[in-house]
Image (cartoon, rainbow over all chains, first blue to last red; front, side, top):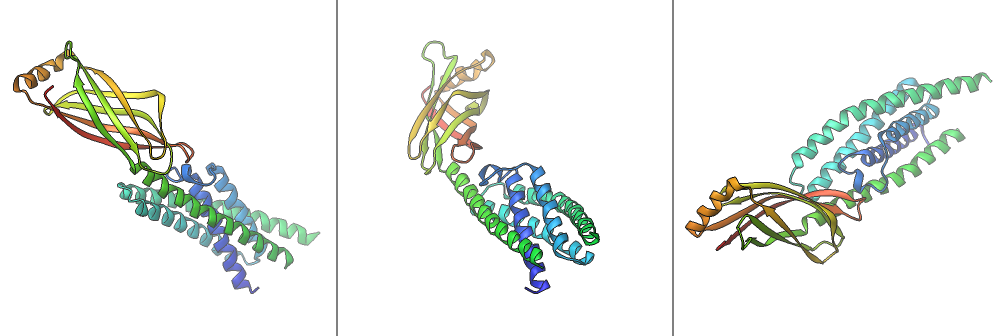
Amino acid sequence: MSVKARFLANTVSCGVILANFLISTSSTLRNFAVWRTSPNWLHTAAFICGFALGMNFDRIASIFYGICSMALIAVLIFSGVLISAALLSDTPVLDVVVLFAFQRSFPSFISICVLGCVGAALSMVLKSLLGQL
Amino acid sequence: MKVARAITIGLLIAAVFSAGSIVLSAQNYIQGINAAKSVRLRLSNLELSEKDKTQVRITFHAVNRADIDVQLDAFRFKLYLNGHFLGSHYFPLTRKLLLKSLDETSASFVIPIQSFYFQYIEQARQEKDFSWLVRGEVRLVLLPFNENEVWLDINEHWSGHQ
């Protein structure tokens, strides 16, 4: 598998996983979710995804780009699912749903990026320690 | 390289499960909201008490056309007579009304009218025009979906001799 394909597979997978966590913590969809979680689990998942990206790639720029991409994919999937579900169920307060999706997306994007970077930094420290041994 | 491949495969497997979970959650949401909309609530009777005309008995009839069970949890509504406000009421149901799929049920409430509003009842009696309006909401609990709550609007008219 080429580095590009691996990068794409990693970021898209992490984005989908985080979108699922976002949905299972969202106040609108939470009760309908297959499993409900607290926002702490979203942060833990973001940390683990960042750690996985850090372990998988060597260049800092690639890792950072990967973390931002996975956060963007996650919030886009979350907003898309929320708005499509509201449209398909003919929710009368669609504008509220759209507003909520955007209100929730920005802080989620930031927190995923921050925790992803923390996870990636830890993985790089671990890699350098393992390299020294 | 083996570690990188293992991580990628692990992430891909988790992503497949997550995608399935997202689709199921969205399906549940659509089904739940549509089910809530399939519950029809109408005013089936409204009468002033025969003795002193200081109480109103309101009966709602609910029909569940959805394929899931719901529970009627609470009612809150405002009562109007010929456009005059007669009071605001909240009835949390201590004994929840289970409304099974494709089933129907009724709920009755006796509402005391405050003395200040008697003038409007008297006026309606003189004019022989009783046009009632009940406006509010009912709280539905969608039982299969982790007891998610949905508020349904009530906007019912009733006309009669009393």
